[in-house]
Image 1: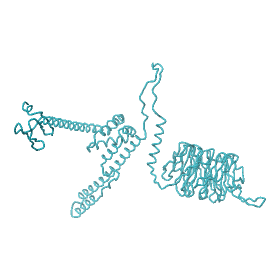
Image 2 (image 1 turned 90 degrees about the vertical axis):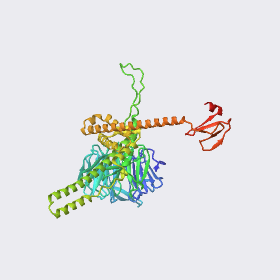
Image 3 (image 1 turned 60 degrees about the vertical axis):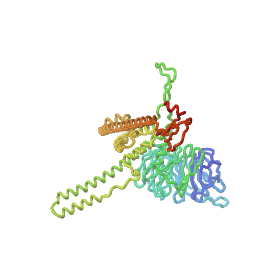
Image 4 (image 1 turned 120 degrees about the vertical axis):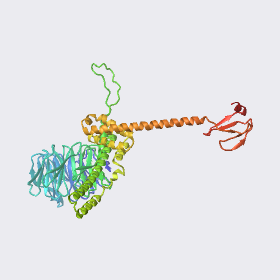
Length: 591
């Protein structure tokens, strides 16, 4: 659902859940709001705040803390919607804050190159009432501006992301240096640590998502995450899955163990600034520069990674085709004598979603066939090895009854090797039939583009499979068109491969034999039809009737005899059931 009523009047820079996941805090340039997670209604509006870049709920969820662009920390009481305390925490921008795992304080990082650790304290007013306050516990100077800070869930480490594109990891208790993580090419914008404190993920302005191990500080994987800067990254609780958002308006879901993208969430219409995941891991909230706050809910629907990748690829291709469009006709050229633009056919814009899907289908089919052939080749090799072992045993120990028993045992062993299980993907078809079915499943309009988009490796495999398809006596037309098209478009590459040249030669001979055979069959069929038509015309001219006398005729068409007067019309029925009428017996006699 999208919370768009009673919302912010400018881009929402920060969003986070309360500890019980019942409320959401959001900040913008001039105000902060607290929302009810279930109903989506605004509970409190805190006007007059600074430009909030980060925030958090304090323990008990009755107070909120906001870090501003001016470097201030603002503490608000949600019950009265009033400002309790305002501190100048940093001399520069306060970019990030993060709560301690034990709930006793938090850490902040700012543009003044300082990392400060804060603790909660109880303040007494003149009237004797108690309220919560903030006190600075420790401070640490860094070499560059601090853009992101994060505690490990086990409370052992403190990670600091810097403007110089590095990440420094310190021990939380002593603030002694532990690790330095190098790899980002541009400043580190965000980071997070997994629940088991074994992995650290970081996103930077270089559009990359990097996965680090906190045991040795090695980079497990670097992934190209977004088309723009990665603005926020969050681990799902008790997993190694994480969400990222960026300036490309998208939210992406990643598997940090398999190093692959799982799915993409689209919905925002501007840069996505921040993310937050509920403690139960079933809700995700995102805030964007389009002034919207979106809550995403986990469902029981299955997600297939390869289908999500195909969907994303199709969207990219469609978007690229919309941007490219058709080529413009040539205009006036100096010295060409052309004063008016010439009408010309639009130039092909290359791959589209249908052709790419067709090419992927062909490649997947050929990979399935390749694996199936490898399985059967290994099976036949195993059987041959057993047979060779039997023969060698008979040659070496062919003297006596013992050798005979060993040879018999070897024969039984070779025969007992089970055949590979049938691949359910093939659905009982042979390799040639399976590839031919996929080839026929692509429409004629998209088949040409699909063949163009095939890599040369798969184009060679398809040429070899066309030999098997022709031997299976399947439809020749589609195969011949495929072979001729590949031979014409990949001529230079084919001529450089001796194996493919021999394959093309064999295909040429096979196609010629097939075409001659089909031509002869068509000729025989045409000749048979002509003979049948000629015989029919000859029979059509013959009339069969019997005449008893001039006044009586027998109608042989239906086997019923009738008396006929001389003046009655005369009917003649031929073999095909056609009736001819004679006006009178006189005309019949003259004829």
